Length: 373
Image 1: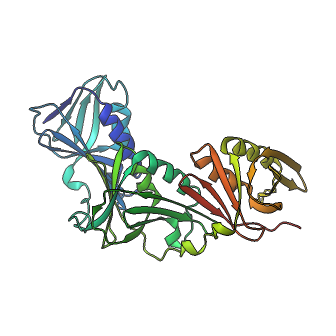
Image 2: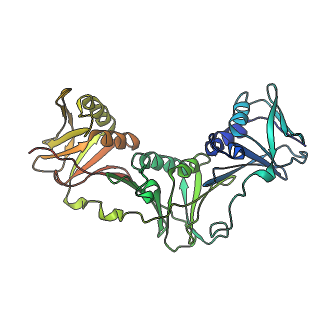
Image 3: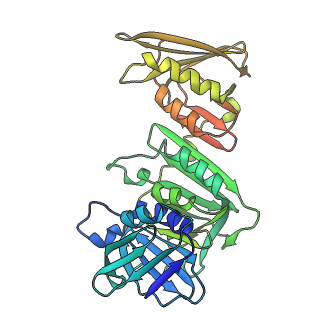
């Protein structure tokens, strides 16, 4: 009935991730828990919010005693194992509704039997191998999530854009998010596909994407023909519900790059200058005027109550004539901060067309705002 481990480093990493699924305000206290179960010499930890489910495998000491399925409050359990991670831990599941933990002290926590924990989903095309998949570096996925977070919607009227679109086609995974005013996308090409080669797509919440990048160097992203979606990092597995609805035809929104003038700037300096001129943006429109000409990029903001700001920085400009466009400074700042590169490209056609910010393989379209001539 006891489980012993030499340290809690893996437990701390697992519970830090899994506790993000635990509902703190729910009529079902079991959803605040992480479930512990044993499979041979492997301890399995499970968590779910009934939309996303995750499991994490940790090897225990050889010859460990059989450990019954037990559910423990996720936050409390993490608070214990996160301390003194180099010290051993012993977990004892009792039959009186409590679990005893010995780790830098003695703890007695309320516990529930594992049979009370929600079932971890039904059989899907992903679980049976009927799916399209791509293996991604988790570092790349984390960067993609950071950009998607700036443009995913938080609305109830158009539920489909509250999620992130995943598309797998021709060994390429494309990730897209939009809130109707800006649109982010990025793509990753995999040399060795996983599963079927037929195109597949699904809309998923942003949260499981972020969780999928929490462990290991690589993660397999799998989309079943039935719309099921899962992420597999070996000893860490995540499956999520999909969001119903039709995602916008996003490729129709992206302007023709062949018609655009390119402004290339140092990304870090650009972020600094946008932050500086934002002190006088209008609190409602957050308007900022960008003007590129003769190797200079000028950023201007103006508010009748606050005053005006202007900053000029060096840039590489591909156009012959000056170009001027108005954008939401907050959107520009969030996108530029989220992108990971030394340089940033700003693609501008004219003041009436959407502007594209590009850094390596990541892009964001931002709709223009009206400015005077």
